[in-house]
Image (tube, rainbow, N blue to C red; front, side):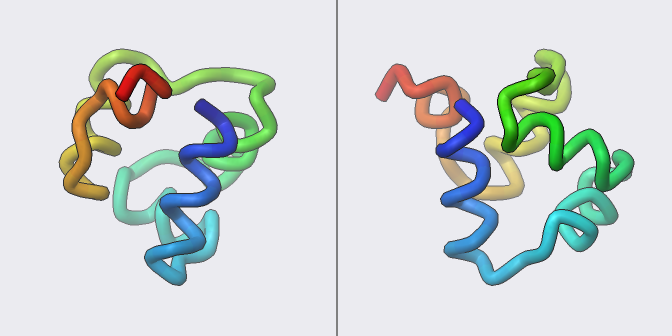
Length: 63
C-alpha cells in the first residue's frame, strides 16, 4: 500500500503537505503511510480512493 500511495501522490504532482491538507490530516501521517510505518484507517482509505478516483482495492493492492 505504501508504494501505491506515494506513486499516486507523485503522479498528481502533490507534496505530502498538500495531500495532508486536502485530507485534513497531519503531514506526518502521510509520511508514515508512505513509509509503511502505519496505515490509514478505513474512513481515510475511502477518502483517499475518492480523492485519487480509484477503488479502495487499488489502494490496497488488490486490483
